[in-house]
Image (cartoon, rainbow, N blue to C red):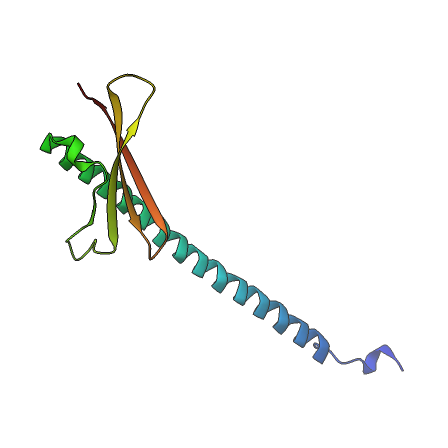
Length: 123
């Protein structure tokens, strides 16, 4: 066989290998995009949880009845934040008359939480 009788082009095996490589790369990029979307949702939910915890802590501190909020819990009435719940507790410290009011906001649906603390001097 002389070199003149060789055909130019790709073999079936080369074409199949190229298709497999492109398919694997495509599936990988789709999975990466899905993970990125999931992570974005998680980060956004965590940010909202911290903002709601801060808001609830400010409400409690402005109410000036901090002792009443130890062990309380509830949910947010807003339709946008209805999946978030909060609870508060008063924590002891090693310093006399000093307590820490902790407010935790949780979204069970996406498994995130945000916690804010406030140091209180109680006579």
